[in-house]
Length: 145
View 1 (cartoon, rainbow, N blue to C red):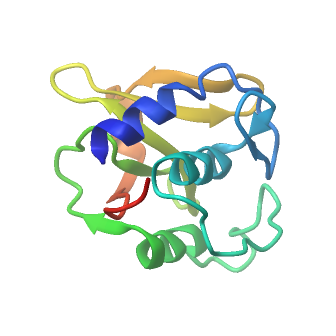
View 2: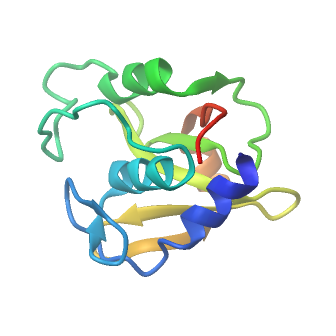
């Protein structure tokens, strides 16, 4: 599953950034990327996602995305991420964790694919600044296509 998830994630590189979208080649945000990789590797999500705004978790101060990921994915110890892991980031100290990526290369120079406003879906090195922002990691459940 991990290799399939990483390969599927790389297939989304170049997709434009579109808030709340999950259409390969047409547009997605970071959650849409994870939803799209899920659909490609496991099948239909089976969960309706409520509408969300860019600041959706801030007013309530609840880790909404983390809780949802814990319900749908397999939580893993933070440790060293493995290829295919879904990574959850906190973009600034004290903020809610709400940015996602998928690890596509492990080892001494790990990299992840993520959707970023203004850039679209890109591959980035899991550099020390990104590692400091990492708050959780998950695996896709086994099974699927």
